[in-house]
Image (cartoon, rainbow, N blue to C red; front, side, top):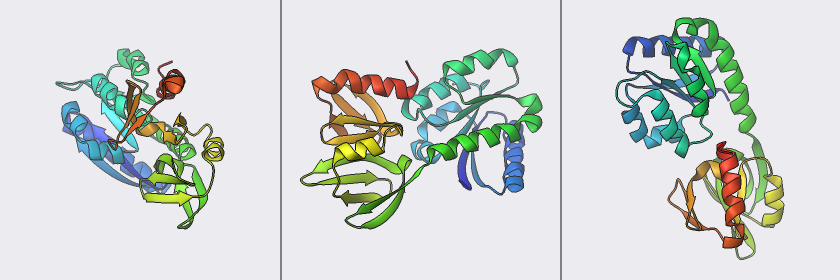
Length: 238
């Protein structure tokens, strides 16, 4: 991945600029193109759903006025569990709290210049590993998709329909076969007719799965406990 959307959230303008400059220097050195967006409060950031959906890496200051970085991370992780979050702070004693919100990294402001390169090397390698490209022979033709861009797959008559960030595509392939192909990629069989990418699930309750798109998918009683467990494991809550 050579292009990346990065968000920095910090209530101190000097600290935002310092981190932004370090990231820009890193991008220039490694030949990456970063789009960096800055926010000065957790409350504001949590309202920016379109920006969060496009975000691939989030840097959060812990010690912000109002909603601090830990509470902000917790709220964002509820909806975007796989979004890598780097917690940045001036105080070492917050390090353990980072594990509670499943932060990907914890950085101290005093030595960002010394640690940012190693941090970014590791995170980009991690992100690229999760951005697997798959090729399918759809009715519409042979198309390559990132697994992360597939929201869900639904059986309709004799075909399965891929609902993706790029549109819908139809394929003559059994859902059982597709389920096997997507094994270990964060998909769950919510129903005999639905295979769902768990990164797009907002909640599962009352035998209904709700997606970030607003789509509601019924979860049969016989599958409910297993589907919830798989989702909890995916979110890292078990």
